[in-house]
Length: 117
Image (tube, rainbow, N blue to C red; front, side, top):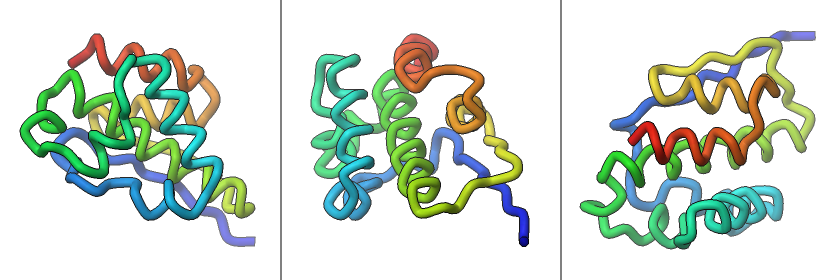
């Protein structure tokens, strides 16, 4: 069996539309965006999918949004049986890696990344 690693992106890789295809097709992705929205008090999916870009690029919005899109992708892949043997992240992506490795809970990472921003 081949081993694989998941590498999570850092701030600067965000874009309007990120995570939209996953959200449309996979329930686990929708649930991930909904969970983040409940914690943050705004519609994370709407901001990620529709912007505006200027709001998405505000650091305290960028960080939890990018984390949410990353974890949505991770949850879709693991639900399909693609489990990594290692995870890593660039800068902000380390929070996604910690969630993927089950070191911290997604809810805690969402709140931490908002504060970090």
